[in-house]
Image 1: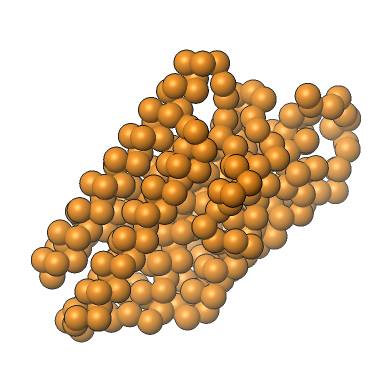
Image 2 (image 1 turned 60 degrees about the horizontal axis):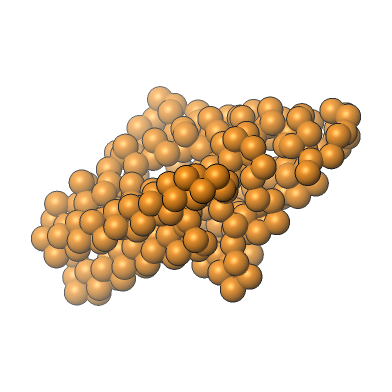
Length: 274
């Protein structure tokens, strides 16, 4: 049960969360939506998705705005201030650094910060799913939903940034055997991650599975050549939809039973540990 508390409890952290949201995550929005078209001027790899894949950032930022507002309410304070605590502003700072160095084409540095961002998101994701099962629709929408999407999306970003840092430039370098092998393994890893989300609990984690499937379909849409990578991306995108459907059925059954939310069993911790 949520405790009744004053809006001023944990006020310092609440203020810091507001500041980093508008300063750091706001700068991310400007970097992505600014005058420089970073999706067509950056390094093109053999796993680069279609630009519309990155629209998921806008949804995550919008949901996190709700998170920032929700922290001033009892239910939000219990999860965001007492549970997530200072990990949220840390994530905002790391994410801002990642997006900015990535937009400036410092891909090796971006890859390192992608790992930091993934670690921070994973820690928050585990805390939210394991210890704070949603007690209301607001908990589901403003806490569980954004961090499920965030966790699935950062898993994709680690793969994408790794290829940008260490892979071939598709604009000038043909795909050799090893490039095809690593692209295939990347698709397999993403599809397996979607499956892991689908089986992370009785109902699965639908938003995280959707984030993975969305990305695989975007990769398929962008990668036309070579044919092996194109059709491999399609195959794993189709498989990822199977896990989306499985998670959707699980959520539907739980809602039908009157249950809410997604929790992790002890042995089903996230794939990427902090």
